Length: 399
Image (cartoon, rainbow, N blue to C red; front, side):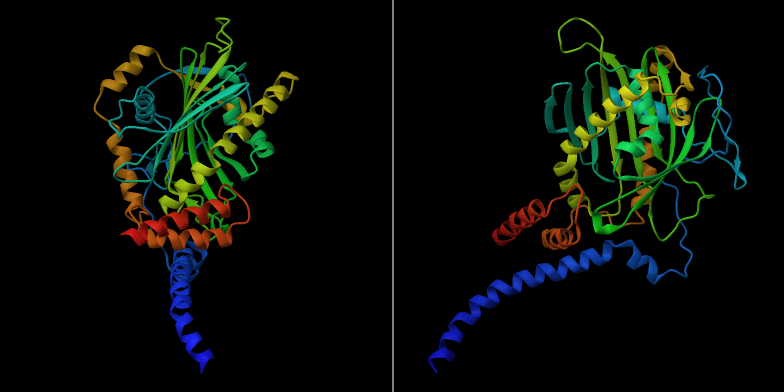
């Protein structure tokens, strides 16, 4: 009898401990199930799902590959490189994209204020990062990196060189050039990246182009629609992707008055198909490690090229770019606002997917637990995720 009485006294406490854990686990499994593309796709594998363009103003063009010749630059013109694809004229990267990145650089794009995230440095590199959360679309990131003893041209080639990227970027599994324009250097490439999130890789179809203004470079890369490359169940296609750089020479922090350092302003956002709150945890946790890895890759590339190695085809294409004078660039910036087109098209994509924003705290807790149980390597650590889950749980008890 005493044993039964003791059990009855302890039972409520045990239930009080177990029930919240199991509720979180159930929600975690639910979130994990919802965000695993293979589950959703397998359930509707026999259905044709129409997809919308990531950008209202974005379409594509087709160019055959050409043999390498002497690198050249062309004067900027309003005529966009284009060709017939699927019966309509397409344009991948044009002056609207140049205008948009120029406004981002000058902080005149009309978006929300940037919030500081990080300010760190090493002996040959300094790094600052900011984030902002627009009303629609995923979180946006801005960073400023200054590399000592680095030229803008070397930096430009490094970002474009997919062949060498495969040697230092351990998340890049495949890189393929689909089409390119020999006149202005515009390229369409396909990337497959390894993602630790729920063990599902991601596929990107990226349009990219470089403009030169003086000795500064505007390098635009963004996700584009390309019907000739069909979607697959695996890897999962990422439609909404924007990652662009502004590169220029700046004075070295050595104080010798030499313009021997290179400044890189990066603007990045993408919808990876996971809840944005969880994605932000991963970015914050893995940001500095990723930055140091890029620096290591860059120094390897610098040694590789200074040793007399030939340019890869992708790096060669970075030398074919469009020149634009400062007055023309200012004229573009002063024309009607172009950012609305990008915001509108991002909203079009986001309307097709759960936004991941303002998700209930309990879902974040459960999702974090499920994520911690499924990740074996990558940007997020189990300790950090579970720590965040405990913090949200404490907040939930106070509400």
